[in-house]
Length: 426
Ligand code: NAP
Image (cartoon, rainbow, N blue to C red; front, side, top):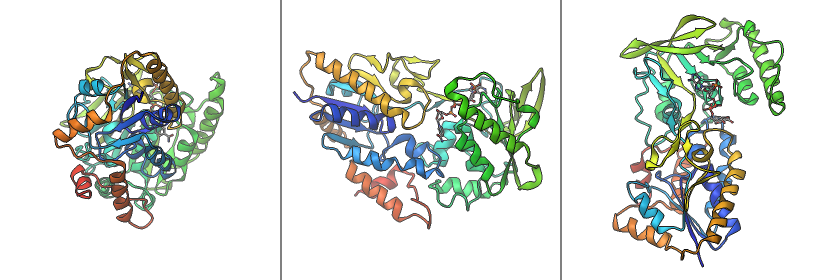
């Protein structure tokens, strides 16, 4: 009895789920569906363009997608090209690996001003995600930037804006973003955390990297730094102590050392974004008083949720589809950020997706349902609708074209528009 499973989303959660299902049940037919013609979700469009080491995991993902029994079905949008109900009718199980890409909101006045962006939109913009290339990011009159949040995404955003063109030469920053960032006259970047340095969720490699930038000097007020990390979870002690040591070193820096200043503001809660039509500043509350910082660009890096995707019930607090250990409904599952919320690193998804795969296979083993048609049914629907499915061999052509177009030192020159990707495949 050949079972078929559709995985919606080809980011790390989805790919590891495909790997697990294929390992455990090699005869199963697994379709990994993505609305973009290119795979790998946040590895391509979320991981910072200057962190190519992290992106090297795509070599492993390429091997997984080539395993017998696994298909990549790119350029297929569930909800547009194939109905969600149609997908559920076609496959024995459906896995939501769609990530969590709806920016959380601060819920303060001024969030709708031009020049205010959530990190999902901003990161997708600079990473050349087809649906976000047109995000109205205007850096032409930006001297001061406020990056709100004290996690690794906030560091990524600050660093991408802080680096010189030379420092980004070996990255795959999208052309439109490189042009805008190169032309901008950013002088001050404010990294704003509502809690203290010990509570910040930076990892130390990311924090320490800010001390090695060519044109940007990180600045910390020594008075904000406690003498020790105090009581923290034992598993967190090492990173917290390393972060405190790094911040202490930053506190010895002087503002004039480099042309761009990166200011750390701790215990500073945003209460309003200021400006008329376009953002001009951020009002912060700290210890019973308020103060304003100028900011012609504000990027909120405060987490994500799944939003109202596919009309499924969500768990708003966690930012996930409502699920129990990955089980959303009979024959419907979630993995990755869609399951557990926006946390962890790429590797976190492997064990998590393997656990959900075990759950799926246990449920299927108990099911008395006859096998469903799976890929054959999907192919029929898509063919009838004239959808150009981008398979793995097609992806390799897009990949090769991007690599061939790379400027010296860069790994690739990203093709952004869907139409341009599809044109390569004719
Ligand atoms: P995160 O680590 O959860 O950080 C979110 C930040 O937003 C926290 O500092 C949080 O403060 C703050 N925040 C939330 N609501 C806020 C509000 N209303 N006002 C002010 N601040 C608010 O999440 P992330 O940075 O988005 O990263 C997501 C995941 O991806 C993390 O697991 C991260 O490690 C991972 N990631 C890893 C890398 C890497 O390894 N290089 C790079 C990027 C992302 P509180 O703590 O006070 O809530």
